[in-house]
Image (cartoon, rainbow, N blue to C red):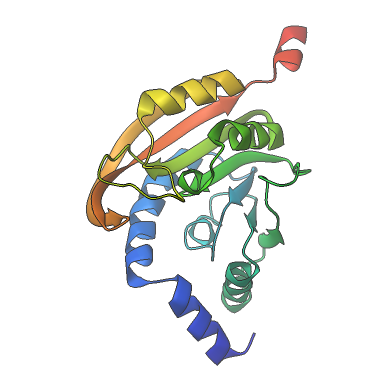
Length: 207
């Protein structure tokens, strides 16, 4: 990609606010990836890779998946510029197609709020995890001040736990880790991190 084109596209997507928010998220996610040097990670809804391209030193490989080709173009340019050898991108939308990928870890950062059917996407993400794999979700806590036709107004911890348990996840942990001004649809809001483990019933019953 031409350098000027790259810079213009990156500016459009990687705003100062998004970069600052990404820094906060990265700091929270990195400890979740301890002892993951031999593991594969899928960043679903990766955007331009603001978060996952800062995690490449912690895992064996990263696959950035997004339904925006333009954002993935920016991510690919970053990968090339930085000489990152263990990250690649794929254009896909799990809300419209059944994924055929597998990974030990799936990261979903500020993506669930954009997807109408929460349970369905969690089922798709469950299906791509290897047995015992980990799902890491970052999103906004439920916020009564946010009312937008195209996004959820955040999630209550209990609501998300119920979805995750229904799909089959175990060892579900959720905690709020950041409060910020104007970070969610221009409203003051807080973000949570959730980690849960895929347990394949068929496999575990054979043990």
